[in-house]
Image (cartoon, rainbow, N blue to C red; front, side, top):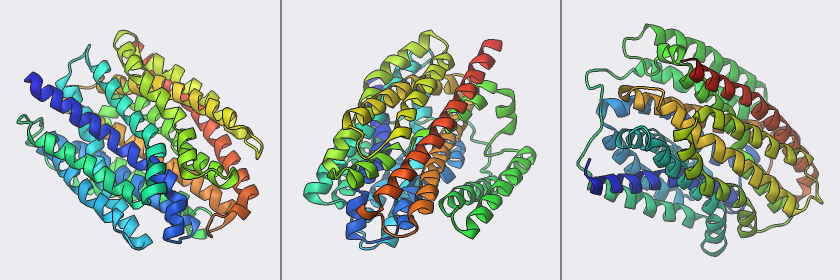
Length: 457
C-alpha cells in the first residue's frame, strides 16, 4: 500500500476509534442536563445510553461478516455517513423519543466503525508492526474517553448538551471525506452470502437479554431475559447448520485463543463500562459537582489508558499478549474494589486514585488482548474476528449498563433521580461496584485460559 494512503488510513481509523468512546463519555456527563431539558424517568434516561450500546451490540457481529463481503472501506464509508446524519438528528431532538431514535441510528452506524477500523488496520499493518498500530488505535479510544467528560462538560455548560452531537458530527464528516481519497478496498469472501436468519436471531437474543436486565425490577424483565437466552440457544443451533454463518461456531471451538480472549473482553467491559455513568451521578448528585468539574475527575482513567496503550501494544509484539492482558485484568479488579467503599465523605483524591488504577489495568488489558485475537486468525477471518470482538465488547457494555439500570431502578424506582435520592443512589452505586469487582475477578481466569491455550499451540 502507498505510504500516503497508509497515513490516511491511520488518521481515519484513529478518528473512528475516537468517535465512539467520546460519544459515550460526553453524553454520560450531559445526562443531568438532558434530563432537565427533556424530563424523563430514570429508565428512559438510562435508555439514552443503552439504546446506543444495544444497537451497536445487535449489529456489530453481522456487520463484521458483511465487511468481508461488500468491502471494509465501503461499509465504513456508509457507517460514517449515517453517523453524521444521526448525530445531527440527536442535536435537534425536541423530545426523548426523537433523541433515543437518533441514538439508535448512532449505535447502528457505530457498529460499522467498530468492526472495520480494527480489520482494516490488521490488513494494512503486518505482524510485528500490528501491536504498535493497534496500540495507537486503542490510545485514540482513550483520548475519546478522556476528552469526552471534560469537553462534553464544557460544551454542555456553555453551549448546551445539543452542541455535543453537532461537534461529533463535524469530526465524523472529516473522517468520511478523508476516507473518500483512499482508492484501495479490502474484501475477501465475495462468493459467500449474508446469513439473515442468524443475524435476526442474534439480534433478538441480545435485545431480550439486555432489555430484560434494564427492566429486571418489573415482572416482564425476567421473561425478556428468558426469551433472550432461548434465542441464543436457537442461534447456536442454526449457525451449526448454515453454509455461510454470521458466526462460525467451529472457528470459536477450534481457536481457543480467540474464544477465551473474546470472552475475557466481554467480562472486562461488563465489569467496567458503567463506571463513568455511576461516578458521574455520584459526583454531580451526591457531591454537588457541575458537569465540567465531574468531567475533569473522570478524565483520570482514560488519560492513563491513552498514555500507556501504545506502549503495551508494542510490548504485546514482543511478549505473549494474553499474559500481559491477564495482569491488566487483575489490576482493574483492584481498582474497582475501591469504589465498594464510597461514602458521602470519600475524598476526590481517593476517587481519582481508583480511576488511575483502573486506567492502568485497562491499558495493560485492551491492546494486548486485541492483538492476541487478531493475530490468532487468518486474513479471511479478520472481519469476522473483529465482529466477534466488537460483539463481546458491546454486549459487555450493554450488560454493564443493564446491571446499573436494574440496581438503580430497584433502589430509586422509575422516577427522576434527584438530590433527595442521595442515600439510595449511594447504596445502588456501591452494590453495583461490588458485583462488577466480582465479575472482573472471574474474568482474570478466562484471560489466563487464553494465555494457556496460546502456549499449548
